[in-house]
Each structure stands twice: as structure tokens, then as C-alpha cells.
Image (cartoon, rainbow, N blue to C red):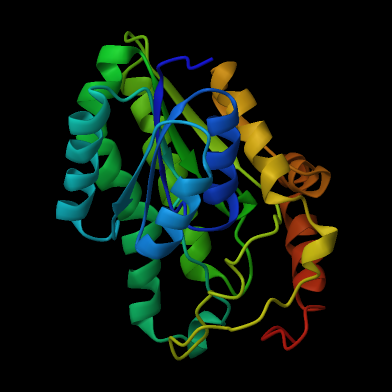
Length: 266
């Protein structure tokens, strides 16, 4: 049974975004999926058992984000949920890093969220809907060798948190969604010091939470209109411990991350 609610998901060509589209579709939502890889979107759209629309969108371009919202309204006439999921990562020490890489991460992770939210917000206010910022545990605690990634996710946290307060008198829902390590392409696509892609994951993907399980938590959090959702036992532990023992968490994180294959940490 369709519930007539319309959800936009950015970064939907793979990973959490793709899994979220499948999860929302199975729960009766109409889906708008957005990403740069339009061939992947069309393939996904054909597999969804719901009304769906694919929109080619580079979230670093304000005009693309505005077009995404316009296309959604033209097709469905409303927006109930915006999931700002598009994101890229990196792995390199700041001292070795081409500074433009941090700009790239901010453009995708932070400005993409800002642009999409700016144009979607008037429509979501009309439906008393939800705006989601997908961050990471790295948006609560700095992650070594991921300066640009952590900075961008901290920025999204601050943006969504502030919007919640600004709209305290409105019946609109803002949620910060923080997966821990989750199976996706983000580590293969992560940028290294010279700006090239890492090409392979340094972690055991089969030991992580699946993207589909992550998507189930995302939908559940939206339905319950939660302010924050933090996933995985390790992720929750880091956030709690950091409140009371931040220097201990510094050491634990450093030692944990330096065990990765070819880690830039010594």
C-alpha cells in the first residue's frame, strides 16, 4: 500500500543511499533518487516496486540541487523527506594532503547538504516532514587521517542541529544519522594525499553492518522522529566514552586506525 509520501535520497547510486531507496520503496514511499552516476540510478529505479524518479545530480552544484527539487515537485507535487546522504571520504595525513581535497569533501558533504536542504525546506515545511543529515561517528569525534571527512561531518552536524532549534516552533523533523563502519563503496572511492582514489578498502567489509541494515535504522529513526541516531556498538561506545574520557579515546582511535593496511599513521 502506497502511503503517498515522497522521499528524496542523494548519493543513491550505491551503498547506504541505494539500500535506503530499496527500504523506503518496500515500505510504500515514492522515491526520488539522485547521484552523478545516472546509469546506476536508472538501473536501481527499474528494480524498485514503487513510483520512482531518477535525477542526475552533482550536489556540489547549487543549480543541480535546485533542479532536483524542481523535478521532484513536477513529478510528485510534494516532498516529505530529504535524506542528505551524498558523501565522499579520504585517507591521508593533513601534512601530506593536497588542500583542494578538503575543499572537495566540504563541497560534497557539507555544501551538498546545504544546497539540497535550502531548496527542499519550503516544501517540507508544508508536509511537516523530515530533513536528515547523514554524518558519521567522525562527525562526533575526529578521525585520524580523515581531517577533511571529519570536518565536513562536524559541519553537517552543526547545520542540522541549528536548523532544529530555528524551527522549534514548527512541526518539522530534523535528524542527525550517524552510521559507524558500514559496507559501502565509500572506502574504495576515498581520496588519498594526491587526490587520486584509494581504489580498495583497507577494512574487512564483511565484518561491518550491512547497508541494508543501516537503511532499516534510518527509516525507523525517521518514523519515530528521532533527533539523533548513532549506529553500531563501537560507534555508540566512542561517543559515550568521548564525553568523559576524550584523551583515552584519542589513544584508542589512533591505535585502532593505525592497524589498517598501509595506514599513514605510524
